[in-house]
Image 1 (cartoon, helix red, strand yellow):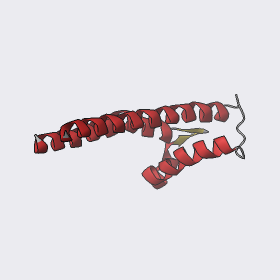
Image 2 (cartoon, helix red, strand yellow):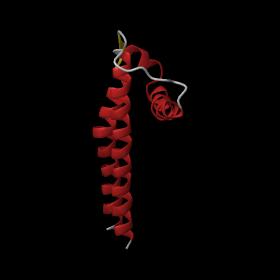
Image 3 (cartoon, rainbow, N blue to C red):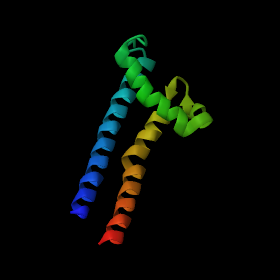
Image 4 (cartoon, helix red, strand yellow):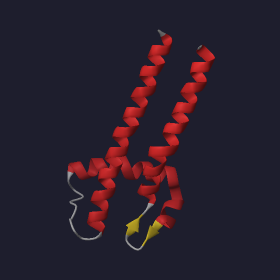
Length: 106
């Protein structure tokens, strides 16, 4: 019973991470289109403010002052680096932690 709950929590965390990665991918594409002048974002829009709060607030906390070194011209590559971390490194650590818990229980 406990193992099935752990499997559910593990899969739920990975699915939440996938959804959050999708949000990041959408925001990266929108921000790059805005940087190239293809679209123009209305930063007073509630939807844009929500996306900005979900993404930029996290980036500022994760990278801190290092974020400004990842800007080349008008392109900010820090969201792309963070998306790489979300898709590769964090799921590895989540799986590692849950494998440790499985071994401890079973």
